[in-house]
Image (cartoon, rainbow, N blue to C red):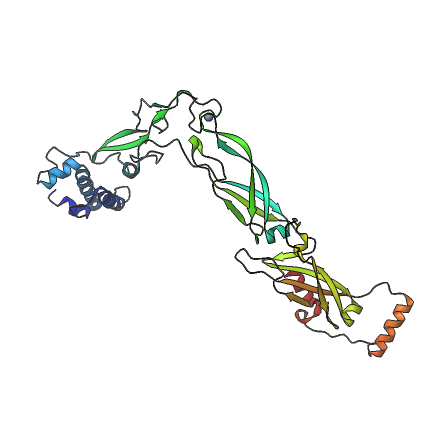
Length: 389
Ligand code: ZN
């Protein structure tokens, strides 16, 4: 092997361990016999592997840099039998990929707790204007007996004898590349590097116990069904006294008897008698604010307002009232859209029929021919659109 080892790997002479590893990993992916079986690739794979074997060992690399023959002691010799691609990748990534893999030392007993999700039903006014709610949450809290350490009072964790506290043990595999050393989590201490000989009785060594907590959630104005309100570090605490996860409150807005919500707009339908539609009238509409339970200190809210219905209003007519809808989560406020339904009178007595016939005569409407139009231009089409909008 006369070629320069740095050139073989395609790195500069001052490349650090990371750069070497990266370069070799990239080449190994291209050239490994499992991936690329042609003889030329196999030969190059052996060469770059040998080069990496030398340059990744600080002593051998120093000797090579001084001009020594890195292969004088006899390198490899095997022809790669039984040495698979995944073994090489394991050598880089620490085998099972478990905690402590890759030489990161013992893992901490402390871990972050899991996030939690609870669902909360609110009514439409609460969703629109915001509300503070008390919630009871079943969750994991820090064990007060051991303060999260998991050790019985007065006792301490002891260093694991199997791994001497390293939390990992070396797994050595011989191959034509030389020894491939893989670090795996120590099975005796599960990678912690220490063992708790006397676990806390209250939490069985977990450092946390189940408990029911009460907390107050502030639901911001403008939430809708599916909105998730995040409460930082209100989820369950982690094992070993680790920090708490987050609590997410998912909102479900209950249907309202009057208003239907579409985005930030509110919709409602108001029925008026045919006579009122013809002559015009004023109707009283409730506001969504009327639903709010007023605290004594709060300013009085407008619980209703007057909506003029002009003479000659057709059934299906829509009135758009800006800024009477739902406040947006990011400011602004939607509209209230009122659809007027003009109702044809039923159950007419003789006198009423007489009056309507007289009216029809006066208006020349005794024999109406009907006004046939495409559906989408008709009053009914518009009305249907208003309802299914
Ligand atoms: Zn405990």
